[in-house]
Image (cartoon, rainbow, N blue to C red; front, side, top):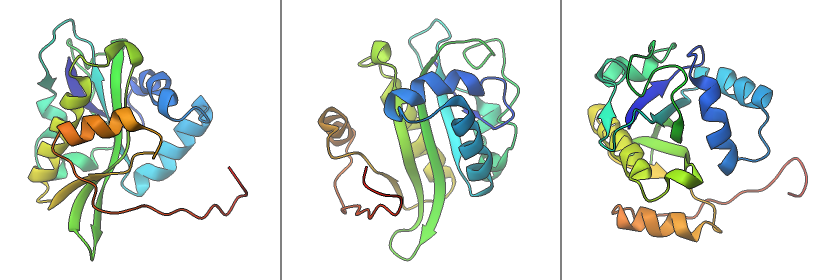
Length: 178
C-alpha cells in the first residue's frame, strides 16, 4: 500500500471517485471535480491509499514532507509504486487544516472511506496514521473528524484508534429536507 496526496490536476484523481462515492453516493464525477476545484482554494485536500502489491504502508515522502506540503496544487506526479497512475485506490480521506477558537489548530477529516474489499486490511489505519503525522507536522493540537450517526462500524474503528467523542455536530438544512 502507498499513501499519497492527490491534487486537483493529478492524473490519479479519477481513481478516488468510485471509492469516495461509496461514502457519498450523491456525487457525480463532474460534481466531485467541481467541489474539489472550489474546495481546494479553501484548503480541501485528498489523500489516497493505492495498491502497490504490498501489505506494508509506504508514504510518498515527496508529497508529505513538512509544513508546506499541504499547499501543493498538483499533488505530486506519481511514481513507479502505488502512487502511479492506474494503481487501484483502496481508501480516500478528504481533509483540511482548521484554525478556530476551540481547538486552535486542527486537521479535520471530512471524508474517510475504504473500499468494501479493502476493509480490515489496514487501509483505514494507514490513512489515519498518515493524517495524524501530517497534523503533528503542521503543529495541530488535534485530529478531528465527523462521522454519520448511522455509521456504527466506523465509530467502533475510531474508538479502536483512540479517538473519542468530543462534541455533537448539528445541521439545519437550508436546501430542503434530506
